[in-house]
Structure formats: structure tokens, C-alpha cells
Figure 1: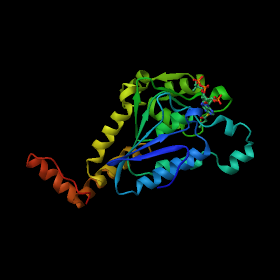
Figure 2 (figure 1 turned 135 degrees about the horizontal axis):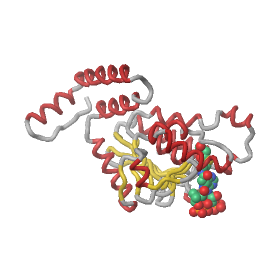
Figure 3 (figure 1 turned 90 degrees about the horizontal axis):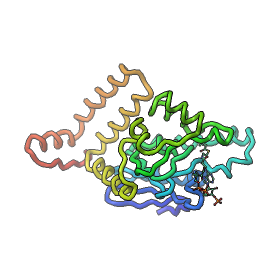
Figure 4 (figure 1 turned 90 degrees about the vertical axis):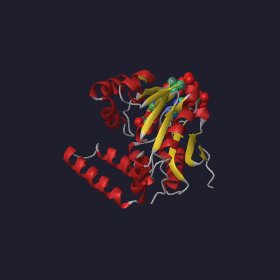
Length: 258
Ligand code: CAA
């Protein structure tokens, strides 16, 4: 296994738990952490023993944003030449589901990282925000685009312009997170959700993720057409026969991922 310094990777039965681990900096997302996270998630994506991934932080902070101290001294030329933040796009190429389990602060890049995952389960102490405006900048890892699609223009404007935080209840009400659970149970609940996903046929899971994501990228007519074609294509897999036979025979399905 590869040794990481800023994250922990714990492989369980079909589910991997990836923990951001820069506690002294509230998991601020520096370049090393980004590279390690993209590398780890890319490796898990092609690891046949893993079917779903949970990304979490600590109880105090999922991540308090991009590393301000790392960015502080950079020039425009540095940022442009490095195409700063572009490597995060590696996360959205992962085909297997990634659940963000968010406790505490998910600010700036932390909120943006959570939104790059497929859905967010929040602990009841979670706080989301895009405070970049307080630093004289704006979101740079997708916040202005993804947050607006998740919660609508009015709330996204409010968050990006005032820098205020949203608590877990508001985040759930607004559609930013899918569920809120007691912070003490957060990781267990997220792993349970990942295990549930991992119990299904992986081709159908990957296609479900793919078609939902297409809803953000294409027209309704094209999305519906793609969905229908993908639905048809699942009939090429033995698992469709198994899943439907199991229903008819009133027994649990035994998926083979074939
Ligand atoms: N970058 C670098 N270091 C950070 C950090 C960040 N984003 N957030 C926290 N830290 C560090 C602090 O500097 C502090 O380090 P020292 O002990 O060496 O001083 C340590 O983590 C603990 O933080 P605090 O003492 O500030 O903890 P707190 O409990 O008093 O406050 C907080 C918590 C409200 C989250 C506060 O840390 C904070 O406001 N952090 C910055 C939030 C922010 O502005 N995020 C946006 C970053 S820019 C960005 O993300 C751009 C983008 O779009 C990708």
C-alpha cells in the first residue's frame, strides 16, 4: 500500500473510508493533500475489492478550506501557470460512488470538496460556507457553480457574498445535504450507506451515478435518452436476470457484478 501523509485510507469489506488527516490545520486542503486524495481515490476506483467510498474529516472539521497559508504569497502568474485547483477535477473522474461524511466545518474548498462527492451526509454539528469573500477572493474549486445548482441562486448568492455559514438543518432544507445524523454516528451511518450501495450490482451503481451526473451537464431530452439507453444496456448483465429472478422468487439477490 502507498504511504500517505495527509490522509488515511482504511479498506473494509467492499467499502473504503478515506479520512482527511491534517488535524492541526483543520484539514486545510494543501497541494499535497489534493495530490494524495486524487491518487488514493483513483486507485480505489480500479480496486476490485472496493465498491463504494466514504470521505470524511474530523469531528471538528471536514475541511476548513484551501490552505490559505500556501496560497498567500502566490502571484497571478504562479496561479495561472500552475492552473491552481485544476487537479481537483481528478475526483470527478472517479466512477464509483463517493459519499462525503461531513462533521464540523466544511468551508471554502471544504464545502467544494464535499460537493464534488456524490452526496453529502452531514453530522448535526456541520457548518457549510463559502467564506472566500472575507479573504478578498471568490470560490475557486466549484463553489459558485455547484452550490448554485444545489441550493439555488438566492442562497448561493447569500453564502458567496456574505460569507456566512449554513448549519446542518439549513443545509438539509436547502438540498445541499441528503441526510443529517447525530455527529457521533456520522461515520457509521455513512459507511452503512456505502455498504448498502456496495451490496448492489456495480455496473448498475456506476450507471446510476453517471446518469444522475448527466442531469447537470445536458438537456432533459438528451438526459432522458441516455438514461433509457443505459437502462437497456443493463439487460446485457447477468445481474439484471439475478435481481429480477430474486424478486420473483421472494429471496435476496446474489449479485455477481457480471
Ligand atoms: N488554511 C490554512 N490554515 C487553516 C485554515 C485554512 N483554510 N483554516 C484553519 N487553519 C489553521 C489555523 O491557521 C490554525 O493554525 P495555527 O494553530 O497554526 O494558528 C488552525 O488551523 C486552527 O484554526 P483556528 O485557530 O482558526 O480554529 P478556530 O476554531 O478558532 O476557527 C475556523 C475555525 C472558523 C474554521 C477558522 O479556522 C477559519 O476561519 N478558517 C478559514 C476558513 C476559510 O476562510 N476558508 C476558505 C479558504 S479559501 C478557499 O477555500 C478557496 C477555494 O475556493 C478553494
